Image (cartoon, rainbow, N blue to C red):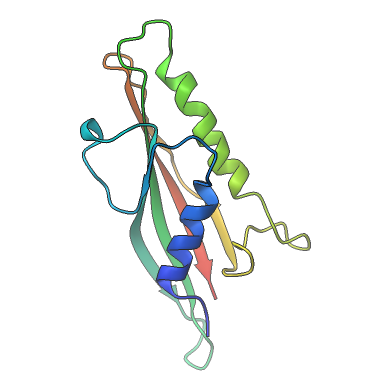
Length: 143
């Protein structure tokens, strides 16, 4: 049997937001960014697509997630919000580097076929308020 949705979501969140990265808030439920400690990361389940080559073959499932990152430099004019946000984006890229030596895919420790950033990352630079955000699309392929 392949991995469950809950197993994958929990493994993905643990991979992109490990202890020690500096997040004050980590979760899977989006909340109002004004009221939560930052930096914060939320992993949201976004969509699913199932493809089947033939009725007698197992499907290929593609699960889409969105990692929402919030940072706040407040009114500190010496800090550039994008410069504070960039290391968190780089950490997601680094977390999803391949762990399968033969294929180069990130498999979340063998749980999935692949997990990767796929699509456009949308950013709000926070130039006026100091509160910056990014939405990172992540696709997980489950056999």
